[in-house]
Amino acid sequence: MRVLLVLWLCLPAWVSAEIYQWQDADGKKYFSDRPVAEAKKLDIKPGYDFFSVKTVYDGDTVLLEDGRKVRFLGINTPEVQHRDKQADAGGDEAKRWLTDTLKNSKVRLEISAEKTDKYGRTLAHLFTENKQHINLQLVEAGLAAVSIYPPNLSYVNELVRAENMAEQAKRGIWGLPEYAVIPVGQLTETGHSGWTRLSGEVVNIRKTRKSTYLEFTPVLGKAFEARIENKWLDLFPDIDGYQGKSIEIRGWLSKSKGSFSMLIRHPSAIKDTVQ
Image (cartoon, rainbow, N blue to C red; front, side, top):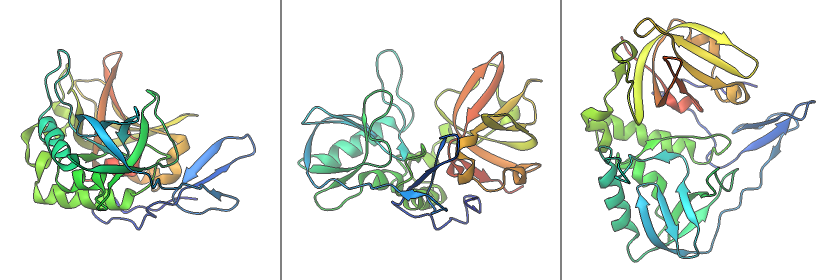
C-alpha cells in the first residue's frame, strides 16, 4: 500500500496518533499511519502522571525529576552552546522559551511506537497540566523544525501544518538567513553544518536492496543524493514521480569519499519548489 502525499503545500489527512504494524513472510516489520490488510494497531497509551522538569538542556531535551532524560518527538530545535561548539542561530531562543513555559509547571508524557532512542533518552510528546502540547507549540512559534523518525508517527499532521504556517509567516528560524534554502550547486567542499535546507533537481533515481537514492545534479563534479530507506517507502508517494522534479530536502548532510548525501526519513522532509 502507498500512502499518497501531495507534497508539503497540500497537507494530507494523516491520522494523528494511530500507528499500524505488520510483517512479511520473512519476518520483516513494517509501519504505517494507515490501516492495511493483516496489520495490527499498536496500543499507544498516553501517560496521565505529571512530573516536574528538573533541567532544560535545550529546546527539545529536558531532565525530569524522576531522572529520565526526555527527547521531544517529531521536532528538532537548533543546538545551544556546549563544550567547544557555538550555539546555532535560534538555539538560545528555543531554550529560553521552553524554560519560561515550563517554569512552575508539570508535564505528562505521551509515548509513540518507540519508548527510547539509542542514547537511552525517553521519546515523548509533552503536555502540561493546562493541556499545552509543548512539541507543537515550539513548531508554531517557529522555534523548531519538524523532524519525523518513523515509526514514531503521532501528531504528524498537526506538526506539519504548524510548521507550514510558521514558515509562511517567517516566524523564528524561518526568518533567519542561517536557515535559508541552499541550492545544491552552491555547496562547497566543507558542506554545511547542522540542520540544512537544500534544493535541486532530481536527475536520477537509483534503487538498491536496502535504500532508494534521489540523485541530484552533481556538486563540484561529485555526486549528491538523498537516501530513503526502503522499509519506509510506504510512507512516500510514488518515488519515481520525483524524477526530473525540483525539490527541497531538509536534514543533516553526510560526507563520504568526498560526496555528500542526506538521509530522508519521512516525506515531510521533502517539499516541491516553484520555479
